[in-house]
Length: 283
Image (cartoon, rainbow, N blue to C red; front, top):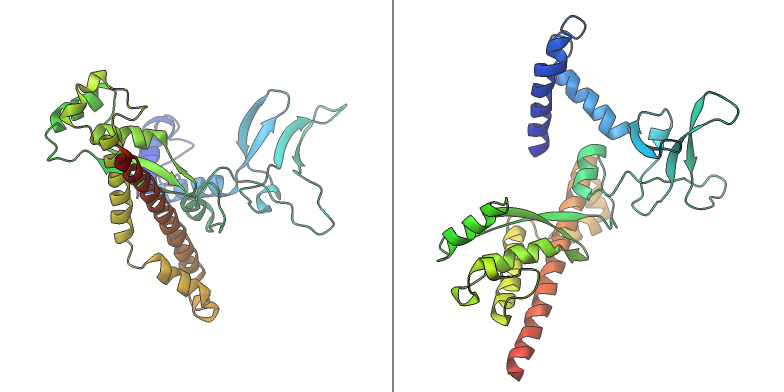
């Protein structure tokens, strides 16, 4: 929905500027919203990143045949837009990231994209995508006795009371932890303006942070109609999985990978909480 909203906003801005100024050559009945969406679809799904060797900059281009190459998140092959020696012409050259044998498929990277982005833009997902992520939304508790103080503090730094953060398969962001430290700050921690959220505020606060993160992941998991185990069982049944359409198979893979990220984050939180138990027992 957010992508559709962005397309509508982009088209509205285009109509008010470029299309309005050049209505004689770009009439509204030709450059319709559907035509705009088609053009953006072609650009986003077929465009390749070109590095200009001479200018030292990059640009997006539509290059015949280059758009036929498949994606790997591990590929470092790249396209160069460069001058042909002893000529005024220029060419696009693909530099492979390693030696390839005859008939091997040369792969490129479409960028550091999550599976949700790959599915939206290109119609597929990658099983072992190191850039895969799931968005986790967290917010101040409205019944927090310091809600007003915390909301005002966030507003002073340009943030709202609710934020979204990416969870990756092997990590979560420092910004997420810092936001949760603020959310979980109790009156005993002192005035918010005196606190440094880049470091633990207290053992109790840090425990509350990981309890909140675990609870947020558990709530996110509950929103899926099937469990990760059910998805794994479905994918493991080759005959049953083959009865689904390609889009359905991609959707199942996407949601299963998202659940795996959430489950791994829960396990990390439980490890952290277990270490807090040990620390508190020693006190």
